[in-house]
Length: 267
View 1 (cartoon, rainbow, N blue to C red):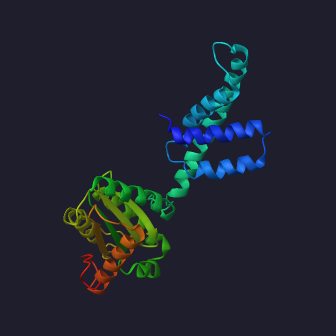
View 2 (cartoon, rainbow, N blue to C red):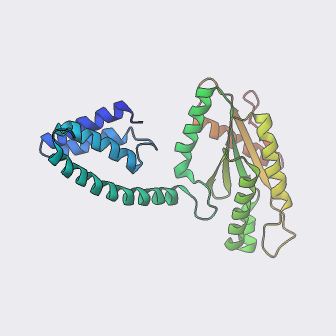
View 3 (cartoon, helix red, strand yellow):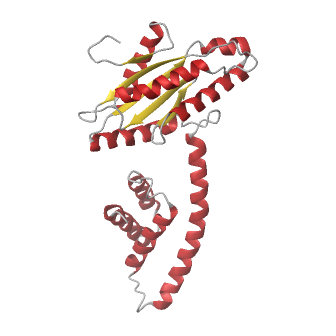
């Protein structure tokens, strides 16, 4: 279903562009105004095509019943545009997927982090449901690279990503935050329930021998977690910072553990 406010904006710019001789000024204004309001629904080629076809018919004053000849040409032009948009749509989706995913682990990267997490936070606020953000950092990971080489380090990161993904639900999100750090988001989950999944991740990482040809080497992880209760103001950067502080407290307390952020306790 077309959002009428977006449609009206599109139609206004299309009419100006057609009637004012295709000026670049109008095009630039349209680009800035329309792209600021695009979401995942509108970026699909089929939806843009529907909007364009309806707007063009209204701008040109063409009716199917009395302007059949003109409509034939509009139909042909639209069909051509549709074929081009399908190709572009496929390309953009593939490009978006490559840009938003870490090539080593296949996880979301920091480019995808803010759009993904902001949507989850907004949903939590609208539904009044809790959301947990956890920061995971592999302990002494630099030693793995120094002792066994970066190839071994890459294997550890891939294995860690797989363990984390398998321990979570489909609705949960995992992001490679940077280096050996991973960000986990568990929507619709309290800190108590999230702790079960996080503890499963911690124990499975410690139990699995992830360094190739060195079965004696144990990898552990320190985890910090914070809960947004589902009500009141919620700032994504602040939540991530709190989870990060809790994770560093886990490091200071001996590593290979989970620390939950407590507002009234020094972290």
